[in-house]
Length: 137
Image (cartoon, rainbow, N blue to C red):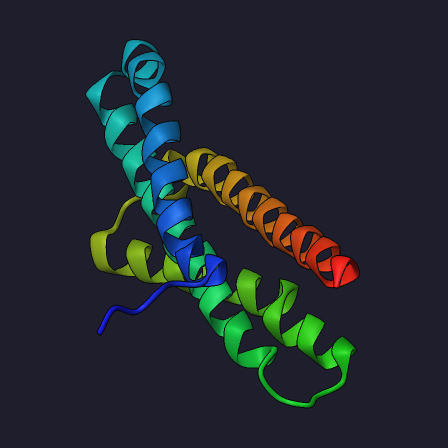
């Protein structure tokens, strides 16, 4: 039996692909400007950004399942949980490894917001295509 994946289930894969492409594009300039250490910190920032955005997406899937009010869904699945998740993952990494936040925070912010924009664009595109299909019937 073959299962098909809905476009929403492909979002984590899309975000991982975008992260890899952005990291590959930034690898040479990062290495030239900051050496191999900058490349490592770019990897840390990209990884934390990806984990935070995919984790926020996963949590949002639970928030949008029930018959809750839309405002509650927006808050739970949106900004507050995502920022809390970002801060928790960043704090955990710093506590475990002892890496100074200043060394990777710029990369983290860049990858995080790029991935949030890709996720928002993908969801808006799906919504737009879904509304077009509904109007044809």
